[in-house]
Amino acid sequence: MKNLLILITFLIYSTTQSQIVVKHFNAEWNNSNSAVWVDDLSDCDVTHVDIVKNTKAQSEHSVVVVPTIIVFNEDGEEVKRWQADLSFKIGATKKDVQEYIDELIMSSF
Image (cartoon, rainbow, N blue to C red; front, top):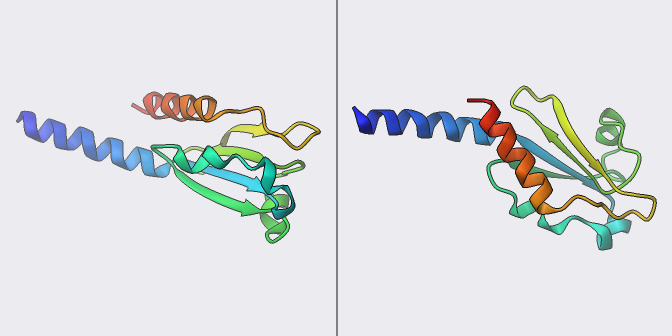
């Protein structure tokens, strides 16, 4: 019985974690300001979008400055956004984004 409960908990957790998506919007001309740590985030899927090559995604998500990091919940809705300042540098850290993802996961239980 205990093993079954552990298995069910693991399945719920693994399903939840794969549904959170983090999109990192940037442009090749701004690679020096890229949030390189975004690929080290855990419990989420990370997607990179070059706004020059994918203007549709830029428009769809109203990205006006790069880099921009957007977190989407399991329903595909935007739930958090971090944007660069006027110098094209983002103030968010890996810790900031990971803590938000962790809170999002815990709130779904």
